[in-house]
Image (cartoon, rainbow, N blue to C red; front, side, top):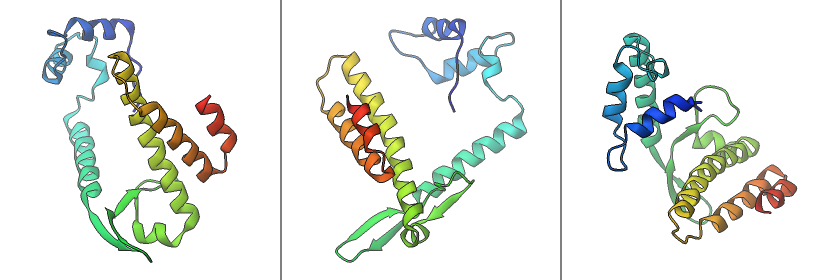
Length: 161
């Protein structure tokens, strides 16, 4: 979910910082306040909000299911379910991915894309606080690998440049 916060909302969040920290409980309390500019960012209908939370909790539970997979050369413990890579709702099993090369490559590309988002965020944080890190190199390597999987090696070169 990509939220687009207004300048006023961003300013309010900055104003709510206490010694460089922002607390979710305080932000939620502000959002609950009648007339708050944060109020519209939330689903206040308890029934739909509860359903959304339960679905998110269910996704957390599904992500915790593990399976041991024996390949021709070694055994690896992996998640049993991954988000359906063909953009349909739900999850697919490792067994299904292992039997469908195209679907398995799409799943790996999707996981690489998620990992790239986290690596880029970490690299930006490290740069912002002036901590040297190899994260930029890791981002470039993962970009190249993802491009190999998709057959888009030109995009990987452009992403590194």
